[in-house]
Amino acid sequence: MTKEQWETLTAVVQGKWGGPAPVGFIIDSPWLPGWADMDRMDYFTSERCWLDANLKAIEAFPEVLFLPGFWPEYAMATEPSAFGAKCVWPEGDLPFAEQVIDSMDEMARIERPNPRRDGLLPFVIKRLQQTEGRINEAGHGIYFAVARGPMNIAAFLMGTTEFLTALRMLPDEVHGLLDTITSFLEEWLQYQKECFPTIDGILLLDDIVGFTGEEDFREFSQPYLQRAFHAFDATVRFFHNDAEGVATAQHCEEIGINLFNFSFQHSIAEMQQLTHGNVALLGNIPPRDVLAVGGPEEVREAIRASLEGVEDTSRVVLSCGGGMPPGVPTENIRAVLEARDSLAAK
Image 1: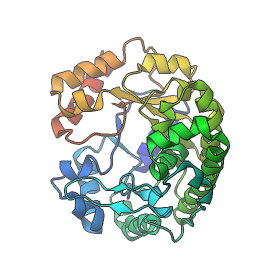
Image 2 (image 1 turned 60 degrees about the vertical axis):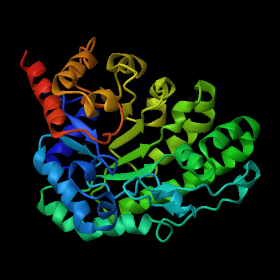
Image 3 (image 1 turned 180 degrees about the vertical axis):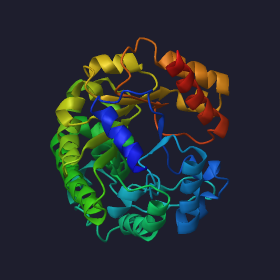
């Protein structure tokens, strides 16, 4: 992100943005290498390829807020790798992390990793350190510390079904696991900030919170998200959950979330009501069925539909209801910008 884009984003978060709603997308390995006509393994293993793909995106769409901006992730394997998860790299597909907890009674043996040395985390830091000069030369900066959320990591370590079952059967042990993971996340986010003092935002991604009801959300998600989002004093606290999002929306303010990327199954107007208009919202075009496989006119119609019932767009960033999916073509991104400009002109 450029300094001007960061200032735009902070104005949106604070409800002070007076212009047309910005357009922004979470971009990472599911979309970026394919769009850049690049082999995915080259993207993960080559500093040059990774940087070229990101530079190509910002050059093609200079008016788009790409979030978090120059994200050196290894798909879902990044944080689980620090806990000792075996990382599998299928040819032509995204890497994934294998389980490290084989039974519920093993949760207590999980130890907190050291983000300065464990798993793929040092590679994340080094990639940014090695490319920061080029990123700055392009007029962009590093503004976000990024991590998967506590429940997301827990589900990778022991399996989603097994983890959700454990919520009911062994709640004390689940709390112990989530406490260990959250302590690690606090240190991991602080370390990113230490390495890159320009960071003034936290982005956490956790869809598993949307698999729980209100009661379980308050017990097993809210306290740990609140701790992670306060790992350091950040201007922007950005949360991605494109599963069921009602419970999340209702508790954003208590947690400290001030920017929320939610599922396209919820309208912007509904999310504004649930957050009392006090949380900036990023959404909510259907990612796969419209943005990836629809045509430009379908995209433009989705933008119009997403703003139905929305009277105040000072806290809205037009996007998809989730991260940018594989296969989104250039013309559909341009269609989002055109629809935004057309609506602003009326």
